[in-house]
Length: 317
Ligand code: DGY
Image (cartoon, rainbow, N blue to C red; front, side, top):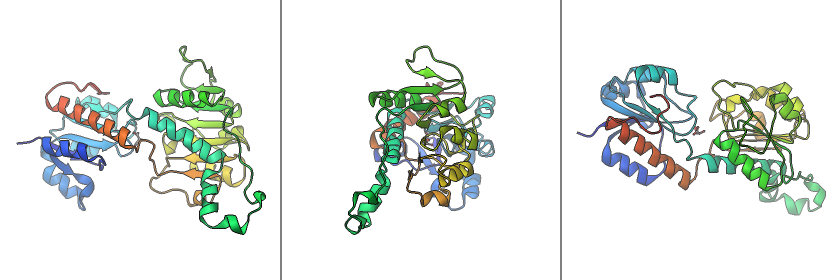
């Protein structure tokens, strides 16, 4: 009999699904209407769980899976899994660390350019047939240059570093904040977030959200200033969203590029009407290349755990 694996989110790469189907009896919870009774029926035999970084798994669900041998996060963020709880139960929690880095960094730069150059609002202007109606150049406000912008990065892990490399190639001076300065980096370390914001034209959030909820609040946005842009490709909860909406509405910052939100898939309605905001549906890792690499890592981790080995990507065992 094939081992049973519970899948909490869809995987969009057919070859990964084919391999999962070939190796395991897949229990796809996300397809079920009545999830509680599905878990009651099948939970006892589940040996592996596949979940997304944003979805994670609750302790209550882990408790309903007495045969659980691995939680494989198909993502890099583990803030939605109680790692200490899993550790105490001896359950390896793995993540696809390293697989997403380049794509997430690409989207951060893409969102910044989209925002400061008004690419989304310009697209809407052309698409809505406004150009022939208002052919004078003044119909669209002048944009802001990205090349050479002072970029401040919050969180200098893999993604933060990849963003820095890209921004540096555009001639941007880079400052960053993290728990401590990093000797191997040629960029300027700034200890305080407020100080970093006040020295940046663009503040890019690339930090883990575990202990950093709401760190970007009205005070930080005020320090970023009316010419400053905020980019978030990490987690929505790093930002105090009502403060951000107010700052944008009052022109206290120049714009924002956001891939993540506090209550996904719900986006604060006020943001939808703002031309100086570029929005994405939490898609920083959503390319064929990255999702394939992530799926391969998930497969490898589950195979290791179910063979009784410690998964190489385990963060808890
Ligand atoms: C991640 O991998 O953490 C992504 O943000 C998806 O949740």
